[in-house]
Amino acid sequence: MKLENKDKRLLKVLLSAILFYFVLLRITSVTAGIAIGIDLLKPFIIGGVLAFIINVPMVKVEKALEKTKLAKSRRALAFTITMTALVCLVALFMTIVVPQLTQAVATLIDHLQRLIDKIPRLLESHSGNLTFIEEYIASLNINWQDIGQQLITRLKTFLVALVGSGSGLVGGIISGFATVIFAVIFAIYLLFGKEYVADAMGRLIRATAGEKAYKHISHVGSIAYRSFSSFLSGQCLESVILGCMFTGAMTIFGMPYAVLVGVVIAVTALIPVFGAFIGGGIGVFVIAIENPAQALWFLLLFIILQQIEGNLIYPKVVGNSVGLPSILVFISVILGNSLMGVAGMLLFIPVVSVVYTLIKEFVLRKEADAAQGNTQV
Image 1 (cartoon, rainbow, N blue to C red):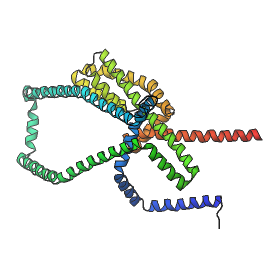
Image 2 (image 1 turned 180 degrees about the vertical axis):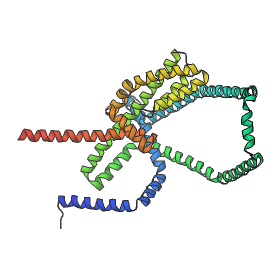
Image 3 (image 1 turned 90 degrees about the vertical axis):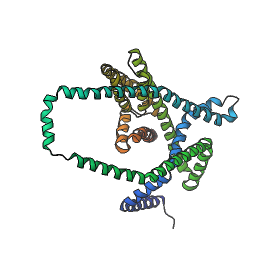
């Protein structure tokens, strides 16, 4: 007996409801199974993320090489140029930031040492006013020898536990290193064989779900790729602009650690909306070590530049790149932070952009169908 389309849809809904019910009954086991699956697939997940990030600039380099004499080997050249640029950026970051960070730490240690040196003289000059504290401590009848013995015993227990877990720590380090190596190898494979992988996935979807499902999945995938790559490019561009603004302004006003603070703000600004505030807080602390008065001026400068960035640069660079209104960008960041923390803040903007685009297409299609129906009537 052949089922009609209506009966097929009803049967699918019924089977989905039954499956959902059994998942709810075994939700603990299902969650544990998902966690184990994610742990097993971790090298492939990390490798896929690395491949996607590297692929964004790599595609642009490949397109630039298409019309040159090096077109035949453009994939290998694009990969080499992209990786060389990334390594140079990391080396530049280390060269610029590490010396200034070392200087800031040395200044902080020097200030702390001066403060520690002043404490004995301060206590000596106010010894007459501190007699009541000595009397109170004496009235507590504290056995300092027992306290010292307990501290030694706990320290021995901690050291024994640390030595006992040493093998586990070493095993964890080796496992993490192996995961990174496998992830990098998988990322390189994806970058050099992305057309083959895409073709294989397309054939699999056609064979299992049909041509219509393939077209729908392919359309959603193209929107997702465009949204994620545009968001990544826009976020990096916005971070660079913000870091340069702070470095230039701090240099003009003669504030210390201009390059260090600018780089820190640029890096933290990769976190949407709130990242720059984290970098600004670090900047206030670092400058206050050198000159507390200038830290207040930096705070005022931060407020001004943050207003310019938040109202002019971010909505134009990032909001337009993913096709989202500013209010939806803000909502995406709030939801992402609530559900997944920093990773959610980075992930939810392109995800919401995909959903927003699909809903917009659906509404436009329905409006066009309604307008066509009214025209025919």
